[in-house]
Image (cartoon, rainbow, N blue to C red):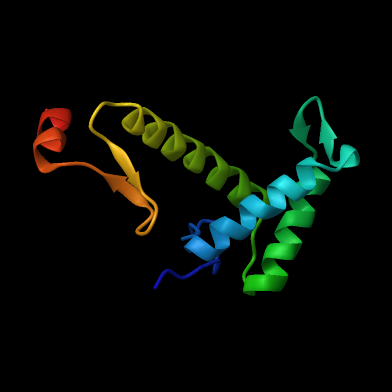
Length: 111
């Protein structure tokens, strides 16, 4: 079980799947509000609103900095998955929500 920790400024936040899914939902919701965007990016008040809703739902503090950091790492993970899934022999297992590949194809890929 993943937990969310925010005992001090320097503590990192370990996100659960439910928290990440809710964050993505809130980001989409906020991005559809014209008053929350500037130049294609979300405004600070959008991140504060997201942080507040995250705290209401999960009971921990989600600062703008922590939300932005999660977005950066999630984007990097997404790009890696996109690249892997574009490689011949790799597929997606919707039941287990993971990449599906034969051991032989994986062995060649990681070399």
